[in-house]
Amino acid sequence: RVNQEIVGDFQIMAEEKKATGKIKENELNFKTDIHAVLMGDSVLDTFYWLSDKRRDVRFELDRLLKEDNKNAKCTNLAVDESTIYNVLYGIQPNRGYVRSRAWNKLEPYPVDNAGFVRPLYLVRNLKDPTHVILSIGGNDARAAFASSFNLEGIYKRMMDQGIIDGFERLVTEVTKVVPNIILVIVYHPLVTSCPIFHMLPKASVITELIVRFTPMFLDIAKKFKLPVIDLARTFNPHDSRDYGSTPIEPSNRSGLYIAEMARHIIRTFQFGKEDAKIYTGLVSDPDGDESNWRPLKAEVIDESFKDLEKYRTSLNKHMEDGRSKVKSACVIS
Image (cartoon, rainbow, N blue to C red; front, side, top):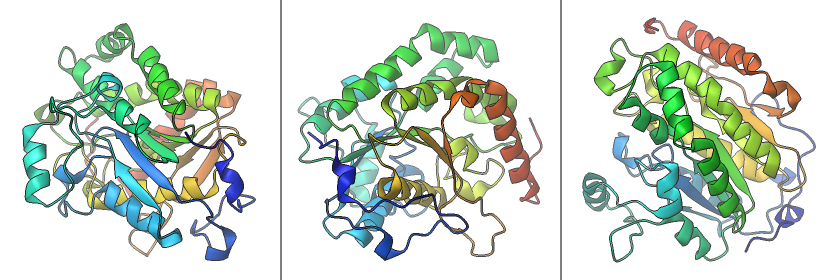
């Protein structure tokens, strides 16, 4: 079990860093060996869709954590195509992903004798996990796309299938083992001129679905006082560099966004003491010229977030800003 007072081993910064978001070495004192665990879907199990498959999110976060403490590590229990149900009860990894891991000399999925990865069981039996990064929900939405591309139809199907209750149960079960959880809101897919080719509804439908389901993450974050990484307002859905070999998967570039944000939160967020926060933007400038830099921002999840219009306005502005920064950005909605 994880010590609830683990953050007492850190010298916590008084406030979030502005400008670059970089943290000086002498501002933190890691006395505890961090063991971060990835759970969920392909937002974290990214390797298959990358140009450099060996530098996935697990690799990048492990590398970054070791910069602070050589004994730190990151373990991957995320499996591409996972839904909430799969994280709770298990999933048999796609054979193509299994073969690709072997071909690229990556660590195999931790399957049991039946060939299933059972993330909740595995995290319960890990030695000394300190943090979990949990990304889930995107494949629950994709399953609903199979029956409808209509906004209300998708929303009704997801609600009827109990996505909110399932998500709360999952987070509750994980907190019994690792209280220090970082929740991840899924990014908006790359905006393309032909979304149906990728089995996606039009961009405006996806945008509104993200808005409607964001409270699911924020309510649980407030209940357990957890930090949230908001990738919907971090990735630029008009910049193909933020996406892998399909419009619905991360790239090496955006995988590093996730890893840097996770390390930043592990370094600075006072689990069990601070109120819930939502994080957007980038820890570092990916191009070094500020042309595509979206500065790191952390907001306390207060009562104002109950107004969906606040989040809807912010998300739409982020998407408009992203389109303005990419000369060839698609304008299909």
